[in-house]
Image (cartoon, rainbow, N blue to C red; front, side, top):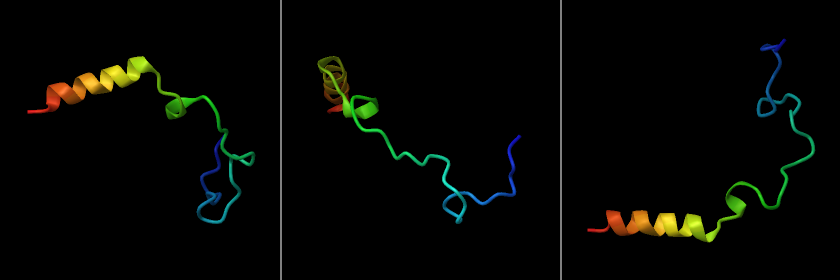
Length: 48
């Protein structure tokens, strides 16, 4: 059960994640040619 009376980390409470943020090949840190081509296509269509 969640205790809503506890302070969040920004408000001075304990942080939920203590190990830091992972770095590497995840999310937006890896963009391949397929994604670049898709963005380029959208930019060309939106250019008047």
